[in-house]
Amino acid sequence: MTTLIESDEHKALRKAVSAFAKSHAHDTGSGADTGSEADSGAGSGSARTGLWREAAELGYIGVNLPEEYGGGGGGITELSLVLEELGAAGAPLLMMIVSPAICGTVIARFGTEAQKREWLPALADGSRLMAFGITEPDAGSNSHRITTTARRDPASGDWLLTGRKVFVSGVDIADATLIVGRTEDARTGSLKPCLFIVPRDAEGFSRRRIDMELTSVEKQFELVLDEVRLPAEALVGDEDAGLLQLFAGLNPERIMTAAFAIGMGRHALSKAIEYARDRTVWKSPIGAHQAIAHPLAQAHIDLELARLMMQKAAHLYDAGDDVGAGEAANMAKYAAGEACVKAVDQSVHTLGGNGLTREFGLAKLITASRVARIAPVSREMILNYVSHQTLGLPKSY
Image: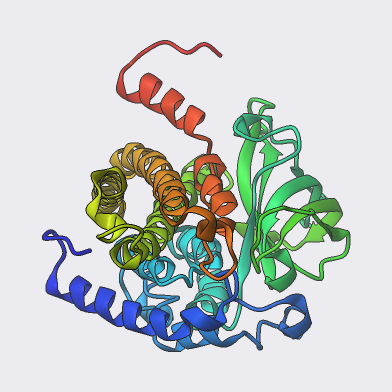
């Protein structure tokens, strides 16, 4: 799959990442391969398994981060391209969405010089990971209901965080978690969002693994913050600009989720196409029959269309158009999620019973593909966003 709107540099990057990913696809298990708690050096970030470590050494993990801090100097455009090609080869890296795309972007745009020096080089070279915590048990799509609060200790100036988070990826292999909390506005008394870097070994910061049906090396966790004491410099950016800073990370998250979904869809479709070319039941391969060929062609078209919107969203974001990127990122995530599910389902049906065997590796994607519809924002909330923000229709809530 190629696109005419890509530069020669992007085409070369896509080709290089594809070749690299294919050389690792056989040893990544479920696809996501960034290590486990047993080999992560107890959070030191010093020991990563092959794919993550080698991708970082080649500059792929930090391609979006500033050059002066060890990154590649590119943007979300380049990072989404990397993740898509890794996924298309069956070797996606879920933590790319979280560590360099969300956390790295927020710190690069709004962090202090000290925060940039401490975190960006390590996030770029893959030696450290950062998780991201926003969702709460009673505050999913409605982020205004977040109850994790941060208050100042008047004596020391430290922050004290209290609250809970759920569905936080990779906490066991992350060196810190970027937590979305809320502080009280002294002028209005209302709560406003703020972001804090919470080290994995902070006192009062605990985690519980959530038992998921989803097959992935990156596990999901519930977090508890019980009066977690953080120094003043743990706050990222301006206390009064938390919402702007939050969406500076959420728009890349949507774009990268689209890349993850498109790569997964392409991976499934490639297996179905190969099978349809070779599998002969009567006189000709099953791919010669329109009942098989046409749905695969439609799935390919949907993935290509989703990619175009993803590229538009990435371009707008990298150009500094946060408003335009917000609309396009939501649309890209919606389109990619739908296209991914359709591609996976059609690929399984193409293989018939073989589509549910471990040999072909498609069955696990039935569950995984649904993630792109659900997270980080549901398709229903995206439709709400478009109907309200784009079409100007009234809200029902």
